Length: 237
Image (cartoon, rainbow, N blue to C red):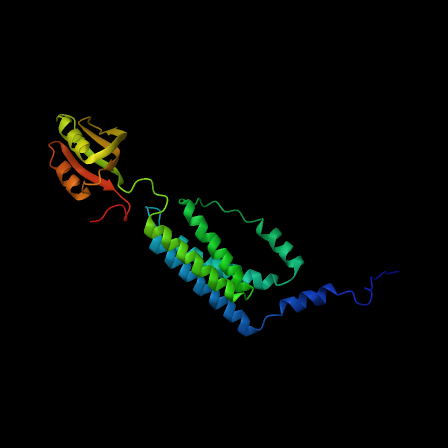
């Protein structure tokens, strides 16, 4: 004997509810939500590229921001109002393991921005998507233009090669004249023991000019290969 469960009158059929949620969106709505997610992702990626500082910029990460926005929008359209599909998606995504290390912690905020805007686009919440984009863009540009949170605006990494046969007093005096603060970070001797590769963490005085300092240090006898690693907005050229 086979027993079958017959839902009482008024009890919604789960299969029917799932199919209804799956096909609730029209083709135009799907295309509009996907296109909006692409536009939002491109704008966030452009803002990330324009406001990025340091040496950790990655083209693949910029493209990932766009993909995240679109994929999340599609995920939200798939889920719809179905709680069962939401739990199924969480279980499926829990299998994935990401091993990529985010070099800049600020990059994480752009990933979350793409997630949030993609969710808004996928749920057809166009007003929230537009307002969120305006606020995120304005906040990113404000922090970029004001250099918010920076402790020093003239801090550099100085690297150069020095001949040990020469007197080190000259280059030390040049650093002392131009730098408000200097710390020796690393000393690397060459294979023959004649040269030293020196690395300093220095903060220049407000009156000091980076280019003039590099030129002055390069003229010191025994000093060569002078390099200063700076952020693109740390100094006015």
